[in-house]
Image (cartoon, rainbow, N blue to C red; front, top):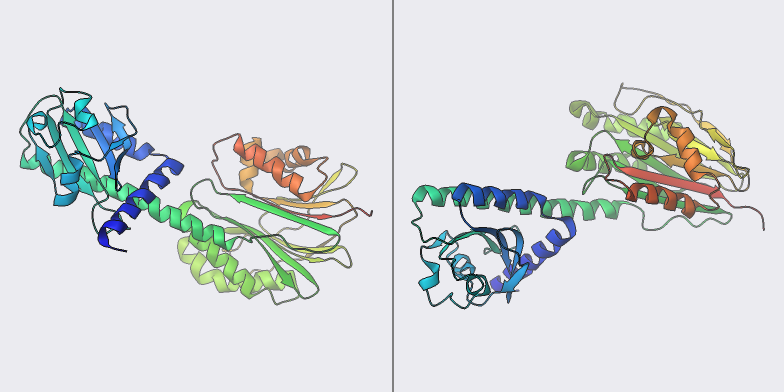
Length: 389
């Protein structure tokens, strides 16, 4: 792929990402630019092969315009601040819709924006105004600084998007398939990436699974989440869930200690032949069994989160699943949505009571999460023993 093709592809990726994620920070930036320079129009513009896309704009309504005759072309070509002190008298740009639509626009200044996906600028931060004016060295320096902020914001969005892809790839692509049982789970980060995770994996004689919640949000929590998941999987060969958690905790001490980070964790093993589920609760607490008759039982496991004290130990709790029983684990983001952490498990039981499948439990939690802007990651994991017949 040649340099221009890479540049166009990067510009298209930025436009697609901005459409999916929104442009609140860029909107604030161009409002600031418009005020600082006292101009009629300020935009953050991406240029693909034929079109210029206005990702953020102030004083101008269009989302896009043909690239033909755009003064931003010159900014891209120069790869430096480009200024036209009287735009309307320059025949090269008189036919451009932004100018033709408002013949009073006479001034243009733009600075290129380069992102990590291209060797050449993919767009510009540009200013237009109704008055011709000089543009000083100090003005150029300020415009370049604002364009740098736009570049940094777009780069952060790209990096978060890639991090989100990596984090999604760490989650299981499908639930286990075990006769007589249903499995379902979902994780929705509050931000692009988060600190919650869930996992399933085969173990000798059954299925192992886990739900963890790393204290914090964002990239840092996501990195630790991946580390916890890897440590738990490495230790999963032990037949005892408590030994697995203790081994993983020891391996994580060097990572959790310096960051003063805690991890709450539910790790479990299902023996499908005996309908027995053994689990370890490391400070998580948000575990319950929903019975087929509508009653519910909280899990009585308990222990400190990972990262509190070295050489911790945990107890294993055993639960027998009757036909129709659901074993449900949620993260505390679910409690935030329900509104009262003090009666959290009771509210979770009320929300899920009467669910006839593991997927229905997940759908109810998803519907709850969809109704609000999330303040915390929301994760749910469910095992259901099917009823006979």
